[in-house]
Length: 563
Image 1 (cartoon, one colour):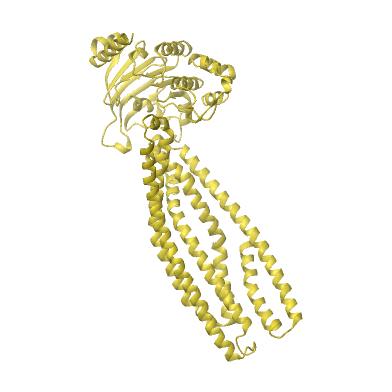
Image 2 (cartoon, rainbow, N blue to C red; image 1 turned 90 degrees about the vertical axis):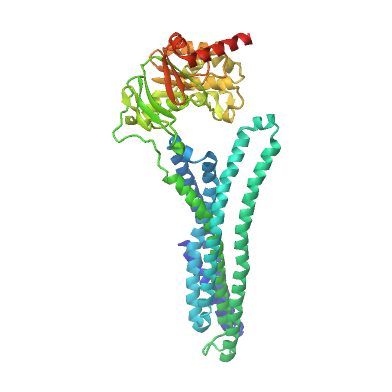
């Protein structure tokens, strides 16, 4: 409404200028000059006020739209399963949440300002022009299609270019993310120059493609300007001839004031077309971004709760029935092949195997981070696919192989396990995880700030904090995925003892590289190439399984040599 009001005031102004010239200036009538002058001042003021409020409302709407879109995308990503996240790279998701949303927001701002204002201005200006002189106004019927054809050419040419640019942005963000995360490795291997070269190459690709797109847009501007100036020249020439023919008599034909109004309207019409050209160029960029955003919003999680879910996990029994699993990106190779296992509630289960034996893939099926391809996984006697997802994951605590801590205090990080945990419960969990000693040595103790990614604590300290965080969930199944690899054997043994004493009814599944970490387990599973090759206790496996025996003896020999 404000935009339409602004357009109405701007359209009336040339008519008032026409009256000022014809009835005031040409006739030397000062009263008419004052009259039209005051009206012009009032119209200009009203146009300014409506323009300011229109721009303010448009900016607010665009910013709100961008914020809502960004929030919707972020909320959607939170619902993704691991397989959905695997489909989009982290760098790509970040680009879509930032650069792509900004492009859409800017285009939306321009669109809501121009979508009403420019077409409205053109229509009203055309009507007013034809009322003054329909013969001269016929020039617009030639100029406008020419400009429209030029706009179509721009959009068709630049759209594929900018679509390609945003794919390159994903690569650029990926390089930056890898470099920042691994900056210590980069410096330790003295690879700064190589990383700079890699960044420069990708940045150069973006530069070249942007230049290519902007060239097309910039070359079109002089053509539009030439078309505009040509239209003005034709209108001026036809108008001058009409004024001479009528003797500048308003009762017979065209007057000087009418010609000034026509020129003003032609400027308005052609300027709005120029603005639309700029907006369309921005829309062509935003369209590529919008398609990438829609991909995020339309992606449905592969893992969802059933319609009538089971909401309570009875106990920590875990059963694998003929389980096979493949990753969607590598569907030609089975990661797990026909797994059959049963763990009773309260047991300590050790899982041992070489790199690539799919130990982590196995345990990630228990809390439904992935779904099985064949067979079933049961927890508490119920297929995990029948549980309410939140309830299942609240009953299964998992310390992942790659430990993650977040910006905030130690206490805030630990309360991820239980947001309502008391200070005493936090301290107790840390004692069980052997984390209280180093926490108490910090000046701020549990209020010590953790940097992003936990870079200000050691690997062993990070592991123990993550174990304490998992313990606060009081889970029925606790999974430690190689989570004590960075601690010494004495601390490892102390953690194992604490878990056995404090959580007797919790099923504890421990993935480890060291035999010492699992040799006292109730059951040890030996895996190789996605298959279970042996199950038993330590002494039994030493006598019956060659792989287990070789690993044990090599680690024993290594221990003797280190001594």
